[in-house]
Length: 236
Image (cartoon, rainbow, N blue to C red):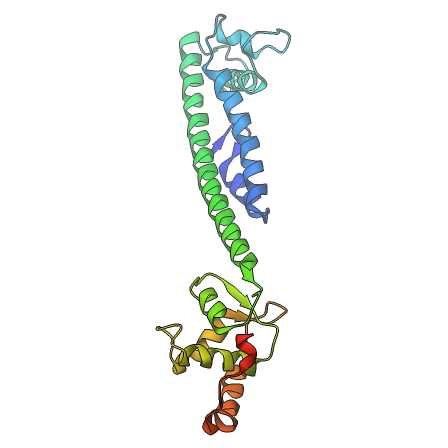
């Protein structure tokens, strides 16, 4: 679609050169402003004959370069015969201006739709960014590492608990929580998945399942088979 100096396909091509949606939005808003200006000009009440709006020597209120060039073009396009002096009449000019106005409005509608889609995309992108930011900031450094305190922290499923001690001590603590039945939804088969999903190390990095399983198997074979008693350090 081509209207005046605007080519919709060139607009789309220009949009592809921008990487950020904010840049695309800024570009389209500038085109939107220009199209609004031109449609206002074409649509405004004309108190003088339209052929006078094609003159560069007259400063007419409500005129614009786009309207001036369009009317001038109509006189140039009427005939290719240099000896033909026919010119479009006022009624024909007004019809042509009205038709061009509709073309500008169609292009403006397309640009408005593009802007709406971009605004939705930016809004969604900002929402996701805020959500990710909120999740990233939702780390808890426990004040105590007692079974009761840690089990309470585990009830909020959106929190990541920072664990500064060893994986073995963490597994040992979860085992105690299970033995004391502080979390009815937790059993021994879920220890590894719980640690990987809910705990992070001091660098806020998630634990690797294979790493946790390796330590878990080691503790199973060395300590728990000997019926290891509850560690008193967790009850201080």
